[in-house]
Length: 207
Ligand code: FES
Image 1 (tube, rainbow, N blue to C red):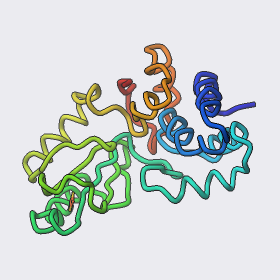
Image 2 (cartoon, rainbow, N blue to C red):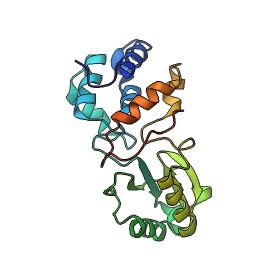
Image 3 (tube, rainbow, N blue to C red):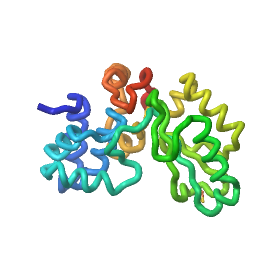
Image 4 (tube, rainbow, N blue to C red):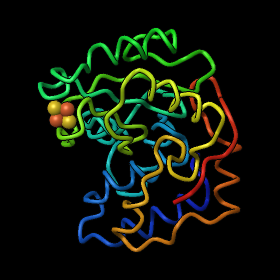
């Protein structure tokens, strides 16, 4: 019996059918599963393996290679701070240090309430808006300590859910294979099942 929801399994089967070789759907399937759980659990990887006819170890081998896929629980919001050269010169390390003090965790860690994970990132290809920060892979512009404080306060209050849904939700993955946008009822069901670190929060907006 599948561990992922019936809707995700149905979408996954449809997605896998878009490729001449089902295993070619591995990465978009991982994103689809991650949208449900916020990360890829062992059980989700087993379901994906069954969908495309590979072993769970092969799914893990692929998922663990890519930065955008997480095989361990993360926060509802993953804050990625670029510290490459352009951003470093614009104060990225100072900004990251400020975030660590503000949230009380270091890069690579998640806050005890499961709301935020901090990551140090390589160049995010937004060098002209340094220091560059992404939240759940959405660009939030060049930040300083004051605007970061405001962003964290907004996210904590749930004020940016339409713009920045829960970690793992990537609208372009669905669009690329012509899957329907997330349906309202399904989005609600997902939020109840969400397994973010610490089990925080209410439902994220679909996209
Ligand atoms: S160096 Fe930070 S986005 Fe390129």
